[in-house]
Image 1 (cartoon, rainbow, N blue to C red):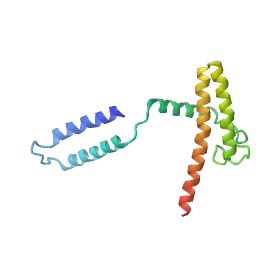
Image 2: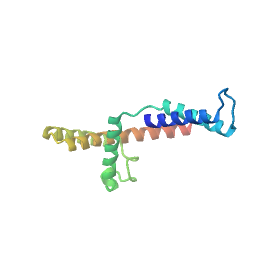
Image 3: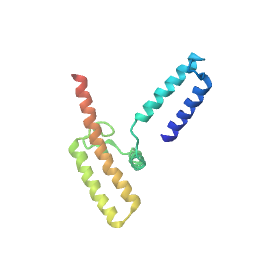
Image 4: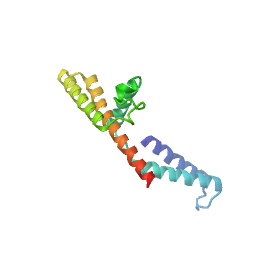
Length: 146
């Protein structure tokens, strides 16, 4: 993100020098509009929260594990068999899966198996994310009904 911000800053400086006279009067209204929009975009980029490298790496591992398990049948993911994925999974079942994964993490830690430790952490986080997603979707539906 910092590289993108620096690139935009550099381009704004160049365009400003190139297309604005020293007294600040516009020489090209189209270019002035572009410069204005670039400055707005830059302000929005600066306002976005930064994602720490470790959070991004963790999210990538979570996605890796989700992708690895996409082949599983609904019954495996959802004992009720209603649809693919987790949208129909009961919170109690997802919570029990977190508990199962927690014990698997403990075994991986006792064996000092770093790759398995990373995978089990991602599994725990994925089941927590599924609860988060289901609750978020439920709240969104409630808002739409109002």
